[in-house]
Image (tube, rainbow, N blue to C red; front, side, top):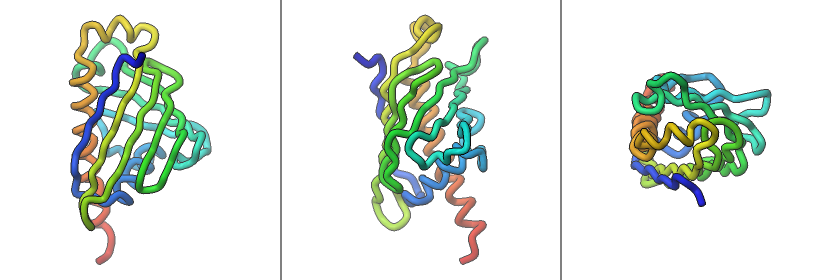
Amino acid sequence: MTTYDLLDEATILATPAEVVRALMDEAAGRSQWWLPFVQMRQRGDKPPSEIGAIIDFTIHDGSLGQRLTTVRFSGRVTIFEPERRLVMDYFDGDFRGSAEWTLEPVDATRTRIAARWMTDPHGGMRLWTRFVDVPASQSKVMQEGFRAIERFAAEKRAESPA
């Protein structure tokens, strides 16, 4: 049985293509729009849009991150359907399980984004999670991420010639 099965959703002012670009740029180290909450980094040469790509996550969020240790875990891309769906298997670090992001266009400028996080704490994190509201922390980080994607997409649109 999975300890956490959490779902965060939002409708954001960004197209599915802009959402995917934001996630891929962040994972590849070409942007830092999710800081100070999340840092994602691609491991190796395989781009984050390829099946088997590995991404390392470091989480800082005031609840989980502002302690003696930092939350870290690694995920492997298992499904990537451009502008529709991304699934990762978390195989190493403080949490093990999976995450699934789904994108659904609402209209020409907005996307319904859903992020489902299905994980178990691992190692010392099992003890720590007894003292922290993990669902609230996860939701805070995801909602901040959704807003950051909107800002990133707006900045990229402003940089592009009309």
